[in-house]
Length: 317
Image (cartoon, rainbow, N blue to C red; front, side, top):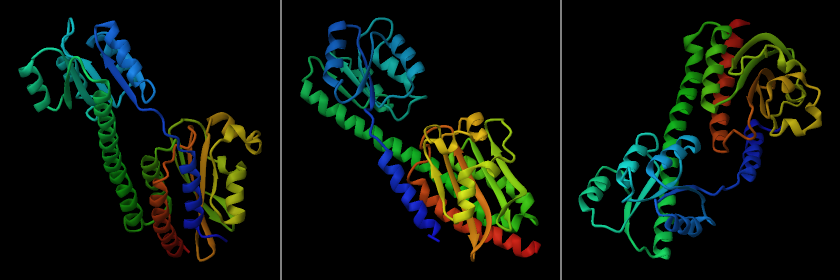
């Protein structure tokens, strides 16, 4: 039987191979159509470029499209100055990098905007295309670093909560039945699952003792009993993983997948000294929602969970 960490490492490599770099999004804002078209043509090869002819229109685009990596905005526009528009984007999109184009000497507006963090740089008109390209490329890299830091801090906190919960469950509860609900809730939060199930095993068969976190609101109490992925995990003792359920004929007759729309499913058998204790099922409706770097946290948490479940098993025997 292959060790759980090695199985999860293989899945990590598989996920990393599926990760494709998408063009970053940027928004260009200018009330002059010629300038707007020029900005679009300058950046369309390297970015997914959105265009707006005013600050008001740009705010509407952001409301529908969501966060962009870079905003390049003209300063002098009717109805709303560029700095005023950019200040309105700061609360919702703090990591977006903002650049102002100006043909005028609006020094006070620009200094205030830069000092308050609303503007990353200002460029005077007429701009040099190569210089602007370089600045925007650096801005996009800055956005990526800011996003990575934000995501890292958020994931670190949720994963720390997960590890703390797993470590403390044997001390907090006198019965595994009481602990299951909290365990699956924290796993579901940590890995943003649509369905998370922890089901105990008795004599290599699924038992009636089960914990479920279910964001879909559908009946899933006994869904693992008819799942070929879960059955293979029990039979082999190995982690089982599928990333495109709807394209795999093996699952075409499994009612749970048809009803729930689950596309990605990770099943982890939890064993202690060759004794199968439980199955952990992590399910997502989206393809490959699990991030490759989260595998490391799963490995550590499963090892801790194994010890916790075994301590309950020993206590209740």
